[in-house]
Image (tube, rainbow, N blue to C red; front, side, top):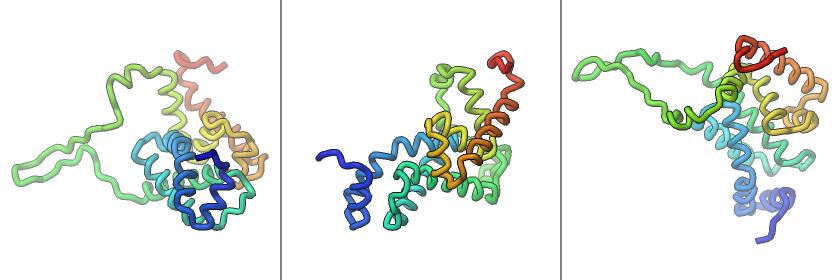
Length: 196
C-alpha cells in the first residue's frame, strides 16, 4: 500500500474508514508513547495517557479541520490527558506501603515489586541522565510538558504554542521559567553538572 499523508488518512477516517484510523494511529503511536512516558515516567501511566488520548482522537476526529498538523493536535490531547490523570491522582486515596494486611494466617507486611526496574538496566544508566529525568519529574506538570516538548520532542515555539493553544510569548516565558526551575533543582549537584 502506498504511503498516504495524514490529511488523506484523516479525510478517510472522517468518512468512516476504520482501516485509515488504524493506520493513522499506527503511524503516531510510538512517538505518542515516548512523549507520554517522558511526562509520566511510568510505563503503565504512559499507556493510560496514550490510550485515553487515542479514544479522544477517535471521538473528535470528525471535527478536526486541519488548521494545525495532526501531530500538533495529538500533542495537545496527550498533554490534556496527562494533566487529567494527575488531577485524578491528587483526588485518589492512597495506601501506605508500610501498611499491614490482615489475613486469616496473621498480619502480613505489604510487599510491592516494581516491574519497571531492572538492576542491569539501572547499572547501565548514566548518573547525569538519571538526575535530569528526576529533576524534570519534580517540575510542575505544565513546566514538565514545556521542557519535554521543546528539548526532547524538538518542537518549535510555534508548534508548542499551537499544541497548547497559547501565545508564543507565553510559551517562551513559561519555557524560560521551566528552565530556571530545572536549573535551581539541579544546583545542588555540582559534581554532576557545571552550573556556572
